Length: 472
Ligand SMILES: [Zn+2]
Image 1 (cartoon, protein in one colour):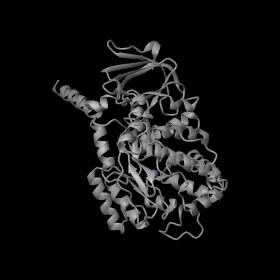
Image 2 (cartoon, rainbow, N blue to C red; image 1 turned 45 degrees about the vertical axis):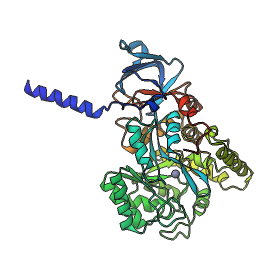
Image 3 (cartoon, rainbow, N blue to C red; image 1 turned 60 degrees about the vertical axis):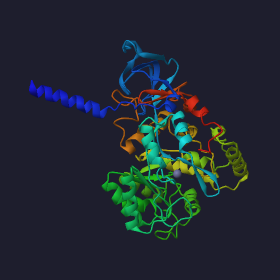
Image 4 (cartoon, protein in one colour; image 1 turned 90 degrees about the vertical axis):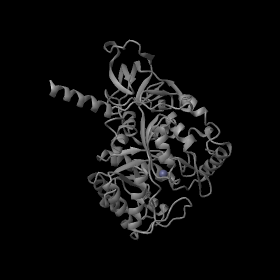
């Protein structure tokens, strides 16, 4: 009996530790919540579970205490007494998006990146993003503080894997430090890890020695390093143990003929070689094999490259911008359309083909949006656009959804809790008015975003920042 009692106690403690309750929300956050009940039943829903499996029609999902308590065909799944029932006939439930190249800043003027965390966390959540990694920060502590405030229920937004300020060598960005060597890289990683950063991003002017030291310090602490590289090639970074590479193959300088070690030959020089590279040729396939063998993930950020490419549609969500910023982007967009000799005309489809080849070869493709570049990549809206672009790239809608959900969660080490819809997992769910498993464009029709079982209203989140994004 005594032994049994101890076993039961152990199980219940484990349950409490594993299944965190949603936080107490502040009044300000409450204004964006439309469903908050001890038990919620989503009935007659099409469930797209995020694993790539075919959608299941007419399902009932029971949410209790922030988690998925049970799930099955509506005809056989009992709705508990007192549950708040939401009939989702004709609608779909998919996992909250887990995207990994997000930022809390935006280009507002020459060399200036406005720190827009306040509005961006709302837009990300409204777009269906319930977990995100920021892929580099130029503000210091804001990513870390927002992560804490969201976790504490004091801000609406996705759960954040917060990156430290960029790890870079001498560079021209006003808001980016210049590291001075390997010891400095190690110190910078240790300092920001102690401050609460949970991931790191190497940038275009880092040296191999600095990158090696940074990776070693991060890995010692169980943290991961990604890179938007240039001075270090993808193959070199893979050998140094990097976990992830940003922007598909668009930042690879592996094929620049006169590449000097530790020197960035310029992004354009790398991209010229990528545009000319054969997707079926030995040099490219050898790099893919190395990345796959070394378990280096690749982050697709098609949304930012689309804004540089002529002949593409205006990106979604521009109306949330401050009028001056909206006009600024629209003028840049017009200039892009007139650039008939733009290298992106060839590079954009090539970049897609390379990412597809990497994934088909067994590589881990994850996704993000990168709201930087020349502007026009709007959080939330662009995460939906990124899924559409993955389908254009050649993935099925179910594969694209998996890349934007379970793949990201797996990379972040969070797949036991989020990233797919399964009994026992956290109820991070997006209700979509349509069927994105057959028409990916339906991901734009987000009705409710559940995070830990609490349903947020995307329309209210967007309305609260509309026309002001750029100020805060
Ligand atoms: Zn970025």
